[in-house]
Amino acid sequence: MKTLPIHCNNQRFILHPSGVAFWEDKGMLLIADVHLGKITHFRKHGSAIPQISLHHNFNRLKTVIATFKTKTVCFLGDLFHSHINNEWLVFKSWVETLNCKVVLISGNHDIIDVERYTQLGVEVLQDWELDGFLLTHHPEERQGFYNFSGHIHPGVELRGLGRQNLKLSCFHWKENQMIFPAFGVFTGKYIIKPKTNDRIFVNTEDEVLEIPLKSQN
Image 1 (tube, rainbow, N blue to C red):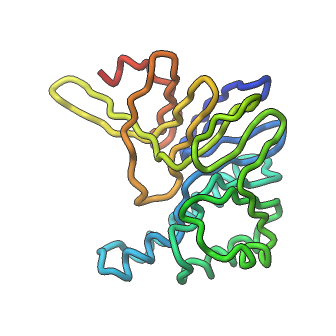
Image 2: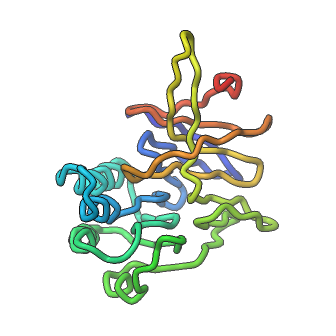
C-alpha cells in the first residue's frame, strides 16, 4: 500500500488507500461512513450479497489499525447504517479486541442507543474541537477551525481516451475543510464538482494519488 502524507495547520496526516487518514501527532485514525449493518440489512430484504461480505469491513478496519501506531480510532459518523442487527455482535467482539480508544462523532444514520456504545467503552460526541481542528459528520464551517467530515461519500469520474470513464472515491480538500471518502463497502459515491482551488486525492486499490482537476474534464 502506498500512502500519501499531507500537511494541514502544521500537522502531518497520512492518507491511506482505504480512505482513512492517520493524524501522526495524536496517533489518531480518522474514518468516515463505515455503515456497518448495511450488508445485513440488504440481505434481509432480498439483495444477493454474499454472507462473506459482512466481514469485509471488519477485516479492513483491522488492517488499517495495525498499519499505524494507533492510539485512538475516531469514526466521523455513520458507523452503523440503521437499527441494530446481527452485525452489532460482530462489532462488539471486534471492539473488545482493541487496545486503543474509540470515539464516534454521531452521524445521521447513528440511531443506535448511545448507552450501547458507552457499555463498550466507545465515546459518542456530536462534534470534537481538537487543536484547531473540528471533527464532524456533516461538513461544517466554524470560525478558527479546519473541518474534517464525512457524509458526502465524495468520488470523481476520470475520463480517458475512447470514452473510457473511471469512478474513484476521493478525499476532497477545500480551503477550510476536507471531506473523507466512505470507508464501507456498498456505500456508493457522490460525484463531486471541485472548484479551482480545491485538491483531490483519489483512492485506488493500493495507492493514494493527487490528481490535477483537469483530469476530470
